[in-house]
Image (cartoon, rainbow, N blue to C red):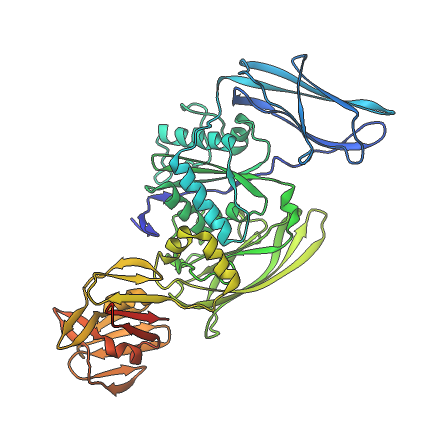
Length: 550
């Protein structure tokens, strides 16, 4: 089985489900003005104490008084001025059955307004899930780490969304839903199976009486919740909800290998940032190099000759509530030498799972520790039929070692984001090899050495494969010349073990400290590193540590 990141991957599945239940319905008229509203809850509800009320926009018209009735009995309703919301929360559990709700508003000089609606409390209704587990806290931290990386506000846990996530995860687990060997979607439920609360995301949102827009990601993977969220973000279709400017709260639940994330979206806020947002973000310093797939739908399904692994997918999203689709896509990706990188471009023009998103997929894995420049131009079509052009050019750098970006992000996402804004790509990595140690440190994170440093006749040697792994290079063995071939970007260094010489890009140089073949492994003398690596090398005598800056 293939792998993503640092954990064994069984399956990551999501057919991005996004519902904007905050959409305002057509306005109804009073004698003097018009208004818009949305009432809640509606339909079948599985929560014993749902919030009951309405979000209204009277414009300049202000009511003198308002009253709320539930099954004919007046109840105390509160008004949230910031969100234009009239809300009632029952103090006791509601009994199963149908309920009739009414809000009345009186105005000076105008006819009153009456809002009437019904909902049904189901016989199997339960309490909201209010306990927060350590896994949920870890999942929330992971999501907010990515929000910080994207330059977006942090989100919070919501008990209603937690309940929705828990119910759906338990349904998937209880019924052993198998997305690998069957065509069953992880986003659907079957009414004939135990634990059913709603066939679709819309019905499950209604079941828990959630009144905002909602999106859902589901991962099927043997991993921690935080690791599952890492895999969801790396998968391009899954990444979209993380990038929404209107995202403000989430629900998270893990049951077995099923990880469910519900995203709460403020539909009104989506219109506040009509911009082209991208991931990786400008000046990101630790971008992964590749993507191994394991996503439904498959991002490269439309390209018959495509195969995994591919380069790390790049997402561009027009975060504007008024956008219906993007088109006329022109995009390119170039490396630090200006070479054009072959990419596939997915958009609403060729991908029925995309609307206002564009996906750039490098056809081959990117190189480690390499700066890339991306450019995207597109046209966004608005709800009123008008179009608006967007263009963006930005740069990012790939991580020097697989997994280093995750370690750096999750250790301190605030510092990670600040470094992008303050220092940009004008930074270096540092790797330290202690000559008496069995671990090396890359940007302060420890990694095990495959072979400890070797010291003989006053000369210290490092294992070439440990060295290459630390600074994003590759190593091959040339048996005919008894030499190790070290490659990084456009530099090739040949370390001969049978004579006092090395070669850089085909030009040979003599050396009084040649590489050695020790126990069938190539060891490089420390004194040779500054001459051959194209990096700044320091030696700290007191700690017997080699520092390589690149």
